[in-house]
Length: 473
Image (cartoon, rainbow, N blue to C red; front, side, top):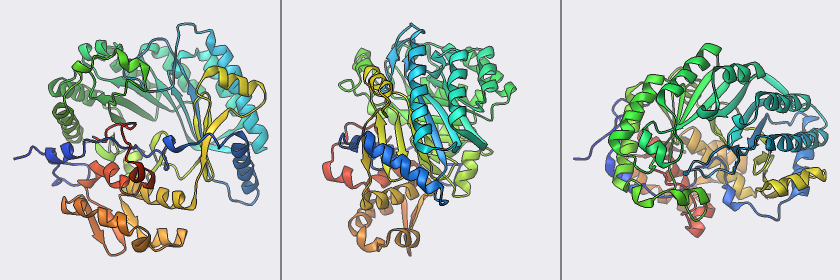
């Protein structure tokens, strides 16, 4: 008989057989956007992005403005983590931050000129790299520049990713004073042997003290990132990490599957592939993590995320208000997103854009007074339709035919005839229910929502090339 996991966050009787976890242990997109970023093209450039910004500015005058989110990418890290697939620059020369901040200020000014307003921002997020590579004074300088161009809306989420090795109580107090109200700690694993194997050593005690201090300072939400599938990880060892994280009681937990793609990400070449856990151990680690977090009282949000029942993300799931953007699940409504910094991705209206991926190219563009956009995508009518369908499944767990039909002037049963037929195996496995005029994902199906969404991904179904994605289990 298969071992099972009970989903206490949705239905106490939900059972998650291990054979299902094994069956769906395949690569697939995370759907922080649709189409996914691998579909961006170089034919979309600065002129297209500027046009999208101008359309937003014009829409603001007639009440058509969407809420605005801002992402700031800080690429620098003092040392390399071997598993990392982010765009980063490894250096111990902190003076390099000054040049980068000047470029950020120039890019912020370009946006301010194009928008010709001080738009309210509902979300502001600093990611990387390690944003805390910058000094407190440098971070204040960036926040001052942002404050001159934008205004934070009441209740805005202002978050920052923190490398615990670069922080202490004083740093956390400084971040809080700057206006950050949410914080995320990159933990990955607490086993010292695993940490050494991925070149990221940090003690449980140091993370514990930072979380205690963050709570004392009044941060509204504390997130912890974990990764399973790393070298030297075992189901037993990862279970200990899960138990220790439970002791820390973060408000949110992001649990990611490690994608070993050494041909694409150079740091991963330092990982001994022979030390990676076999597929059956990866599945056991995921099963143990799900079981552990649910037993600790966490709610499974979907797509690798857990939250305490009182957290706003869990409340948004209960109330059908979840959304998804390039940072993952969000409580905020569909937002335009300005991406600042090297490699940042933005979303403006019916377009996506991405900045230059190298510092020289990024610096060259902004110094010439140009937006550093080097690729992107203008979404087609079909893209917008499929995005609405995929996001409904990923966020609400339910596709209502009528709402899609009214918004996009199509007949779901006809337009998606082939895709709906492909749901049959999911129905037979109890992961999907077909209702009159709706597709409903079951409580058990939430754990496999990526696989269900992939059915409606026209680009993915057309080429079947999936090795560039992380595994969905």
